[in-house]
Amino acid sequence: MEQKLPIRTFISTPVGDARQNWYKTKKKPMLDKLDARIQAPENFAISYIRAFIESVNKLIKTNGNLAVYLGAETEGKPDFVLLFAGIKKWSNLPNTYLLLNKEGRLEEISTESGNMLRNNYQNGIQPVLAGSTGDGDIETEYVYFEKDIIAEILGECKFQADQGRVDGLKVQLVSYADKEAEVGFPRSRDTERIYLERLSIMFTYTKDGRDTSFEKIDPKRYEETRRKQEEDKSGLNSGRPVPPPPPRGDIK
Image 1 (tube, helix red, strand yellow):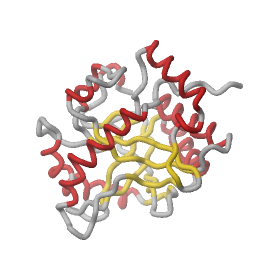
Image 2 (image 1 turned 180 degrees about the vertical axis):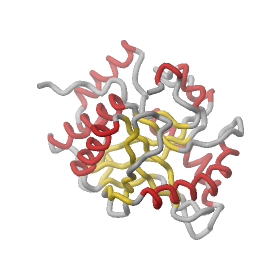
Image 3 (image 1 turned 45 degrees about the horizontal axis):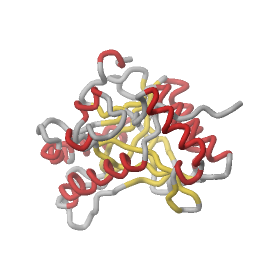
Image 4 (image 1 turned 135 degrees about the horizontal axis):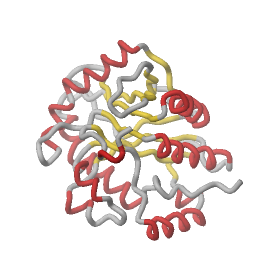
């Protein structure tokens, strides 16, 4: 069966680069000042792509949707971690956390440990980053993926891995840019105005430890995806930062 194009979720290189740059220039410097000995991360490596896909698929099979929570090992320090959890509704608390560890694998940790890591971020990082959101409101707590959105992302990753084109992933820390920059991106949705200058994440490919891209590894489907996105006015969906709550029509 022919692999479907990632029309809803593909983020073009210019948009991805702009959002990575917004994080690196507007948010990361604020975090680096918290402790001169610790540099805030720019991304997290996933070394075993098939194991990662299998683990996340199990989460969404059981719970329906995916939340990727921001955590910190130490309160008041930018030693970020990422926690993956399945949730039935965007507002639910998870029963199980999978920590993306330093070896690039997902490992299950206790609910108490997951909540502690989340609390460290909420108490020590969120208040600092509130000054980087433009409106001074609260920074992102987690990124929410509806089941069909994360399924499309995972399906495309598995397809490319099966073709031998990629063998790893990175989870990039990114930020929506300001209104002036975002309205210049094709296919930006009206709802994205509520996410302006908010932290988010973006999945990118690696092969043999080096960064690569959809455009490089699969140019024909890349061009087909771009054309289809232009026709359907879709794309740029890599999860929804929470808070704020998802738009009412998307609440599940």
